Length: 77
Image (cartoon, rainbow, N blue to C red; front, top):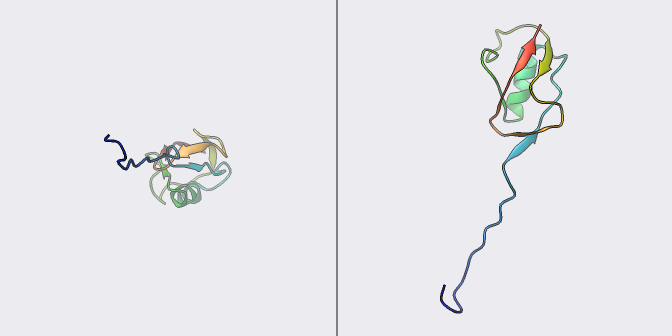
């Protein structure tokens, strides 16, 4: 760049993440709604309110930083 020219510097805050909520113990439909409210999604086949049962596990732990838009896998019993 020529001497005395203006330089613009952009600093990234890193990837956009959200904290994984606690979903174990919730009804599957409620867990999916909670995930969607956090800008996450339920991995297929847990994609609609027709899924019933209690979530017994998820592939991310509560409090984990998860990339926005991630499809979270839930195990339902």
